[in-house]
Image (cartoon, rainbow, N blue to C red; front, top):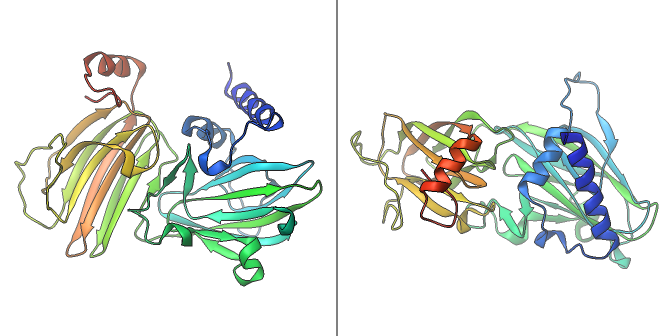
Length: 323
């Protein structure tokens, strides 16, 4: 089955579910990362001139990687809709309410969320995001013209919307901005490399890869104690009271607080450390006390089917497959 046909069937199932009244509010949705990323790969990326503004209609369930103006106009009641936005790792996203024609008194709403909700889980988690959960929403019906622009803290953001009347809708303008110290990233690609740096900040940062992957840590500098002979530890207890450390997480959701700790690194290292993680989501997460400049460089690639089968055969855990 071609990728285009899979996307069409995915939308057909979603529309039928909505017509039957089986869709739940999208914060508790059953949208899978794999289904969502099929929309990402179906979107054509284009090289545009600086003066050209890309415009296209917005779907009830949508995934966008480009800057531009996006308009949603309801043909009938649309009660459970979301548009997901993603940028490059070193970008943050701003979303401006350019034009809005909805009936807030009837129960319509348009809300920008700083992050993503998937399958009832949020990214970044509350323990990793710099602001409280309640402040991560910008609700047009509550703020109106007082706050027309929302800006994400990381390379992903989304819009929830519910519209009852045909012909009602809204337009948003999406822009991307360079973030010199990227934190809490969802990767657009199945393979690549990245260097995460936290410069004297008391914060937690993660890099999420929504595929089973082999990940190789090439360099780790934590600014605590140096020990090039310190091994990567498979964890349950973790790094104890260490204020600065890196952990490799695996799981089938996007909330890092609900994921399984696969390995901990509590000391700096210069040599490579490799691990294969057969989970739907693999996360490199750095915890920083703010006393040092912490840095981790790594690369990743997708696991082949035979590797997944081998890992599953050797595994004794049921959360996902680790080697």
